[in-house]
Image 1 (tube, one colour):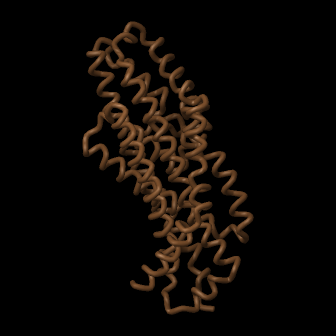
Image 2 (cartoon, one colour):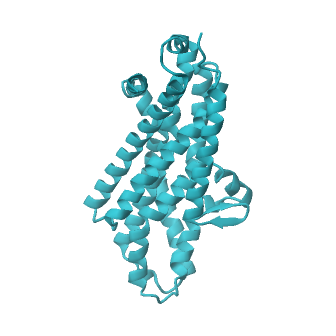
Image 3 (cartoon, one colour):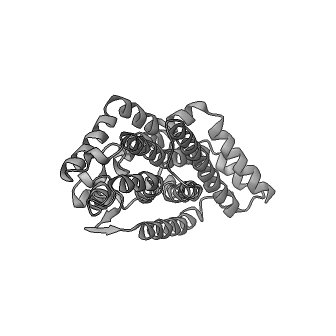
Length: 306
């Protein structure tokens, strides 16, 4: 076990000692933040206002601070969802670099068992993603609280951190199955560029997924990160949505809340059907299990004794 911990620590240090790798792994989250400051906040506000126009007569009942909290939480969720994709991938590129520089030969020649080598890469990437995404969540909650309250109970915050762990593990499992296909660090870096560009759209950080066609929504929701983002949205928005309902006092019969959930994607949609939060979590778990099984077969001969 000591050998496994040592190898895991080595992989973690490779990631966290490279400041450039940390910055680039959070690049999509930083892009979401910059775009939010430039125009995304206005886009979110316009989408919210369009819902208000559809449900006439309640605009005066909605508190402006609740709207501000809703839009700010939307930003936080987009940044977290992006980080849960890019951070584990960035950390897992160590596999490609080790293979390219023949370090995997040296590792395989040691007394470390093969499954420990594979698990060390998996664990270090998942832990890295948990740390970085958890940091974003913590910083976001602190800032939201300083700006007037987060409207969340302690159990909601714990659930959010739980989804960070689940999302980090699922994304790591998925990307572990892809790493054997990259023969050089250049090819993995090129794919990372495409991944960074696409991840914001896949999880709905730039545009709500509900704006896409049924086919595109299904494609986006194939990836577990999208389901994780939807689950986090339901958790972190619970307090704000309850405040909306309290302000309206049931005068709309729940139409406004339903319109918000539809416009801002509170349910993953696949093949024309909406999935509830429990179904999304089951999907994430099943996807992760399948990824781990594929990972075991994919690496079963990679780290054999040289």
